[in-house]
Length: 469
Image 1 (cartoon, rainbow, N blue to C red):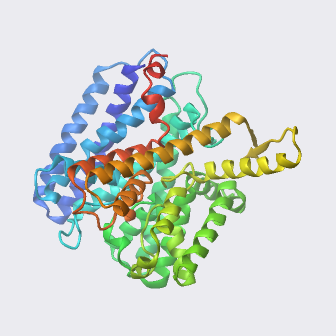
Image 2 (cartoon, rainbow, N blue to C red):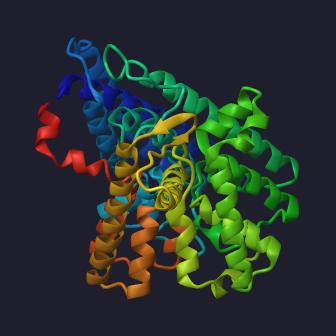
Image 3 (cartoon, one colour):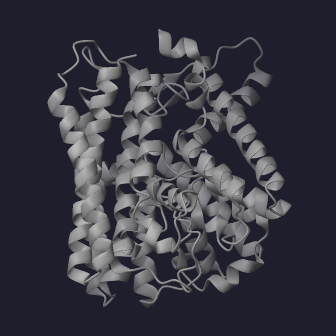
């Protein structure tokens, strides 16, 4: 392992968090929130000073970094980033509860969005609200960057699943092309959020509602936990704009980049776009058969498939949906290069095509059949990688459910919490604030981080031989 490279990258990330603290400090200053000013200023100065000192005192490593070093950074980002960003939540929780604050920070950083605090009982200050939004944004950028670089470099899930035009295995250090991917992800996510927020403001929404809606849609998160239980305040136009934002967030980097490059016509024919459309139609039909009106079914299906859960209509109607239907879309998830959680559409495509190929081969035994994904022929290794991921995902859901049941949750709640945390779908955990004991919180935190590591990345991380190569 290249320890020096890892330390320098983590230090650079610490500087990034210091910038977030500075923004939140300015918000607290403008809002007159004295206590939060001190928290954001003190923590940001400490973290920023530490990161800058390490970078100044260390030289650029001469040893070449590899994808396994990128995996180490990815794991440390979710852990250390969660610890760093937990400090402002101590005051919000109203008690020196480190685990609770860590839960809040990890939930926002992974764009899960669930909160242990009922916002109706304990309204968020402006600076905390903005802090949640900033964590969603940095978490979405990190999720897309890690998928496009680390998972692509490790070849997790098979060739083609995380393949993209922004990253290719470098001849030098693995981290050399990563800043470019970060810039592209940040520009696309932030610009999409700004455009959507401006549109929401133009229809008369308050700045806070516009910020929450735009960030939640593009990052497929839940900045305001109450948004899962309240109808949009801006009427039909508000719902339509959030719906479009959720589509962009679900399809992720490939779709947003395609639109930015003027290749809008190619987006509907992308394999993941077609898979999303087909899955959306299926889930909409199931929701309609379960008793939801058609338009409400489309909105609910879009939000659930995005693993966001933000309500696009009256959420009181959603209570009639069975738990199996509630969990199905979040298990599917969005694009491989998006902040949405779940199994991912790309893997669903590969499995579906492989199953179809098996049926073809039943009639032509001994024939050699192949299939392509985005113009690239997929091998048996690809299919095996996806099958292993599916098995790992199922095992993780099962273990999470069992652990949460042992932690005191009712069986239905344990299933919801296990799948919701692993799929980074905070709305699935809605209403469980009081039921989550400290043990249950730890299980949910591990599930959220494991979901961002896409489960199977944990397997090489647990193998000592992987780090010694």
